[in-house]
Length: 213
Image 1 (cartoon, helix red, strand yellow):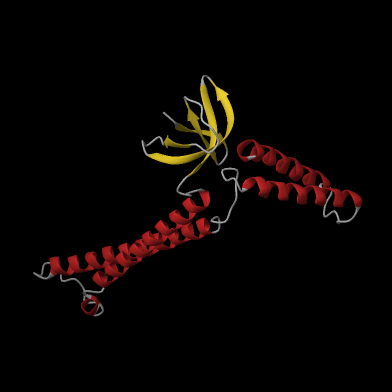
Image 2 (cartoon, rainbow, N blue to C red):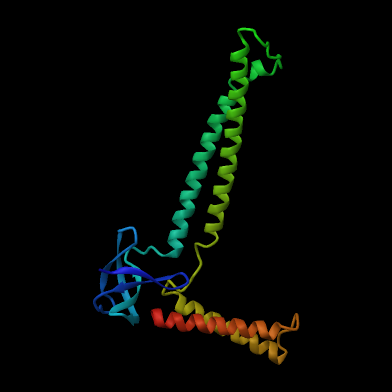
Protein backbone atom coordinates (compact mmCIF):
# COMPACT_ATOMS: atom_id res chain seq x y z
CA UNK A 1 0.00 0.00 0.00
CA UNK A 2 1.18 3.51 -0.84
CA UNK A 3 0.25 6.32 1.54
CA UNK A 4 1.05 9.99 1.95
CA UNK A 5 3.82 11.13 4.30
CA UNK A 6 4.89 14.68 5.13
CA UNK A 7 8.38 15.45 3.83
CA UNK A 8 8.66 19.18 4.60
CA UNK A 9 6.26 22.17 4.82
CA UNK A 10 3.73 22.03 1.93
CA UNK A 11 5.16 18.76 0.62
CA UNK A 12 3.71 15.27 0.95
CA UNK A 13 5.48 12.32 -0.65
CA UNK A 14 4.44 8.74 -1.32
CA UNK A 15 5.44 6.25 1.35
CA UNK A 16 5.75 2.93 -0.48
CA UNK A 17 6.53 -0.61 0.65
CA UNK A 18 7.95 -1.49 -2.79
CA UNK A 19 10.35 0.29 -5.14
CA UNK A 20 9.20 2.22 -8.18
CA UNK A 21 10.82 3.84 -11.19
CA UNK A 22 10.65 7.48 -12.25
CA UNK A 23 7.55 7.93 -14.42
CA UNK A 24 5.59 5.06 -12.84
CA UNK A 25 1.94 5.77 -12.09
CA UNK A 26 0.85 4.51 -8.68
CA UNK A 27 -2.19 4.75 -6.43
CA UNK A 28 -1.60 6.69 -3.22
CA UNK A 29 -4.14 6.44 -0.43
CA UNK A 30 -5.10 9.42 1.74
CA UNK A 31 -5.80 9.10 5.48
CA UNK A 32 -9.50 9.17 4.56
CA UNK A 33 -9.18 6.10 2.34
CA UNK A 34 -9.38 7.93 -0.99
CA UNK A 35 -6.89 6.88 -3.67
CA UNK A 36 -5.21 9.29 -6.09
CA UNK A 37 -3.33 8.34 -9.25
CA UNK A 38 0.15 9.84 -8.95
CA UNK A 39 3.26 9.96 -11.11
CA UNK A 40 6.53 8.98 -9.41
CA UNK A 41 9.43 11.43 -9.67
CA UNK A 42 12.44 11.01 -7.35
CA UNK A 43 13.38 8.70 -4.50
CA UNK A 44 13.91 11.19 -1.67
CA UNK A 45 14.43 8.86 1.30
CA UNK A 46 14.42 5.29 2.56
CA UNK A 47 13.56 4.39 6.14
CA UNK A 48 12.51 1.26 8.02
CA UNK A 49 12.01 -0.66 4.79
CA UNK A 50 9.88 2.03 3.15
CA UNK A 51 10.67 4.06 0.04
CA UNK A 52 9.67 7.72 -0.14
CA UNK A 53 9.05 9.26 -3.57
CA UNK A 54 8.19 12.76 -4.71
CA UNK A 55 4.95 12.61 -6.68
CA UNK A 56 2.50 14.70 -8.67
CA UNK A 57 -1.14 13.85 -9.22
CA UNK A 58 -1.98 12.59 -12.70
CA UNK A 59 -5.15 14.71 -12.78
CA UNK A 60 -3.04 17.85 -12.39
CA UNK A 61 -4.45 18.85 -9.00
CA UNK A 62 -1.80 20.73 -7.01
CA UNK A 63 -1.75 23.39 -4.29
CA UNK A 64 -2.75 26.09 -6.78
CA UNK A 65 -5.73 24.09 -8.04
CA UNK A 66 -6.76 23.17 -4.50
CA UNK A 67 -6.71 26.86 -3.54
CA UNK A 68 -8.81 27.73 -6.60
CA UNK A 69 -11.38 25.01 -5.88
CA UNK A 70 -11.60 25.94 -2.21
CA UNK A 71 -12.09 29.61 -3.15
CA UNK A 72 -14.94 28.57 -5.45
CA UNK A 73 -16.55 26.58 -2.63
CA UNK A 74 -16.31 29.55 -0.28
CA UNK A 75 -17.81 31.81 -2.95
CA UNK A 76 -20.71 29.40 -3.48
CA UNK A 77 -21.29 29.22 0.28
CA UNK A 78 -21.26 33.03 0.43
CA UNK A 79 -23.94 33.20 -2.29
CA UNK A 80 -26.05 30.67 -0.38
CA UNK A 81 -25.67 32.71 2.81
CA UNK A 82 -26.80 35.83 0.96
CA UNK A 83 -29.85 33.97 -0.34
CA UNK A 84 -30.72 32.87 3.19
CA UNK A 85 -30.21 36.45 4.39
CA UNK A 86 -32.64 37.68 1.74
CA UNK A 87 -35.22 35.11 2.85
CA UNK A 88 -34.85 36.10 6.50
CA UNK A 89 -35.15 39.78 5.60
CA UNK A 90 -38.45 39.13 3.80
CA UNK A 91 -39.72 37.21 6.83
CA UNK A 92 -38.65 40.04 9.15
CA UNK A 93 -40.72 42.49 7.08
CA UNK A 94 -43.86 40.37 7.03
CA UNK A 95 -45.58 42.45 9.73
CA UNK A 96 -43.61 45.66 9.16
CA UNK A 97 -46.75 47.71 8.48
CA UNK A 98 -48.27 46.70 11.81
CA UNK A 99 -45.02 47.20 13.78
CA UNK A 100 -44.50 50.63 12.18
CA UNK A 101 -47.58 51.81 14.05
CA UNK A 102 -45.66 51.27 17.32
CA UNK A 103 -48.81 50.07 19.05
CA UNK A 104 -48.22 49.21 22.71
CA UNK A 105 -48.85 45.64 23.78
CA UNK A 106 -52.27 45.37 25.38
CA UNK A 107 -51.51 43.28 28.43
CA UNK A 108 -54.33 40.88 29.19
CA UNK A 109 -56.03 41.51 25.87
CA UNK A 110 -56.64 38.55 23.53
CA UNK A 111 -54.20 40.17 21.07
CA UNK A 112 -51.29 40.15 23.56
CA UNK A 113 -49.87 36.72 22.63
CA UNK A 114 -50.06 37.40 18.90
CA UNK A 115 -48.51 40.84 19.33
CA UNK A 116 -45.59 39.43 21.31
CA UNK A 117 -45.10 36.68 18.75
CA UNK A 118 -44.98 39.20 15.88
CA UNK A 119 -42.27 41.20 17.68
CA UNK A 120 -40.27 38.07 18.60
CA UNK A 121 -40.46 36.71 15.05
CA UNK A 122 -39.34 40.04 13.56
CA UNK A 123 -36.41 40.27 15.99
CA UNK A 124 -35.37 36.67 15.40
CA UNK A 125 -35.54 36.94 11.61
CA UNK A 126 -33.73 40.27 11.64
CA UNK A 127 -30.91 38.75 13.70
CA UNK A 128 -30.69 35.78 11.35
CA UNK A 129 -30.60 38.21 8.41
CA UNK A 130 -27.63 40.02 9.98
CA UNK A 131 -25.88 36.77 10.91
CA UNK A 132 -26.15 35.39 7.38
CA UNK A 133 -24.82 38.64 5.88
CA UNK A 134 -21.85 38.52 8.29
CA UNK A 135 -21.28 34.89 7.31
CA UNK A 136 -21.34 35.80 3.60
CA UNK A 137 -18.80 38.58 4.18
CA UNK A 138 -16.51 36.23 6.12
CA UNK A 139 -16.71 33.54 3.43
CA UNK A 140 -15.96 36.06 0.68
CA UNK A 141 -12.89 37.27 2.60
CA UNK A 142 -11.66 33.66 2.84
CA UNK A 143 -12.28 33.16 -0.88
CA UNK A 144 -10.34 36.33 -1.71
CA UNK A 145 -7.39 35.30 0.46
CA UNK A 146 -7.27 31.94 -1.32
CA UNK A 147 -7.48 33.55 -4.76
CA UNK A 148 -4.36 35.52 -3.89
CA UNK A 149 -2.49 32.20 -3.64
CA UNK A 150 -3.72 30.46 -6.80
CA UNK A 151 -0.47 31.39 -8.58
CA UNK A 152 1.87 30.60 -5.68
CA UNK A 153 4.72 28.16 -6.32
CA UNK A 154 6.02 26.00 -3.50
CA UNK A 155 8.16 22.92 -3.04
CA UNK A 156 5.24 20.57 -3.72
CA UNK A 157 5.46 21.49 -7.41
CA UNK A 158 8.14 20.62 -10.01
CA UNK A 159 8.06 24.29 -11.08
CA UNK A 160 9.72 25.10 -7.76
CA UNK A 161 13.08 23.99 -9.20
CA UNK A 162 13.20 26.87 -11.68
CA UNK A 163 11.44 29.22 -9.27
CA UNK A 164 13.99 28.81 -6.47
CA UNK A 165 16.92 28.88 -8.88
CA UNK A 166 15.77 32.31 -10.04
CA UNK A 167 15.04 33.40 -6.48
CA UNK A 168 18.52 32.38 -5.35
CA UNK A 169 20.16 34.23 -8.24
CA UNK A 170 18.24 37.41 -7.37
CA UNK A 171 18.99 37.06 -3.66
CA UNK A 172 22.70 36.57 -4.31
CA UNK A 173 22.84 39.51 -6.70
CA UNK A 174 21.10 41.77 -4.19
CA UNK A 175 23.35 40.60 -1.35
CA UNK A 176 26.48 41.29 -3.38
CA UNK A 177 25.04 44.64 -4.48
CA UNK A 178 24.54 45.69 -0.88
CA UNK A 179 28.12 44.79 -0.04
CA UNK A 180 29.54 46.59 -3.07
CA UNK A 181 27.43 49.70 -2.62
CA UNK A 182 25.35 49.13 -5.76
CA UNK A 183 22.24 49.11 -3.57
CA UNK A 184 21.75 51.41 -0.57
CA UNK A 185 21.54 49.89 2.92
CA UNK A 186 18.23 50.96 4.46
CA UNK A 187 19.28 49.92 7.98
CA UNK A 188 22.17 48.37 9.89
CA UNK A 189 21.00 44.80 9.29
CA UNK A 190 20.41 45.10 5.53
CA UNK A 191 23.37 42.85 4.63
CA UNK A 192 22.51 40.35 7.38
CA UNK A 193 18.90 40.03 6.21
CA UNK A 194 20.00 39.76 2.59
CA UNK A 195 22.37 36.93 3.51
CA UNK A 196 19.54 35.23 5.37
CA UNK A 197 17.42 35.43 2.21
CA UNK A 198 20.28 33.86 0.23
CA UNK A 199 20.55 31.00 2.74
CA UNK A 200 16.80 30.41 2.68
CA UNK A 201 16.68 30.37 -1.13
CA UNK A 202 19.68 28.03 -1.23
CA UNK A 203 18.00 25.66 1.23
CA UNK A 204 14.79 25.62 -0.80
CA UNK A 205 16.67 25.09 -4.05
CA UNK A 206 18.49 22.09 -2.59
CA UNK A 207 15.16 20.64 -1.49
CA UNK A 208 13.65 21.32 -4.92
CA UNK A 209 16.59 19.52 -6.58
CA UNK A 210 16.12 16.58 -4.26
CA UNK A 211 12.42 16.42 -5.02
CA UNK A 212 12.34 17.29 -8.71
CA UNK A 213 15.87 17.55 -10.08
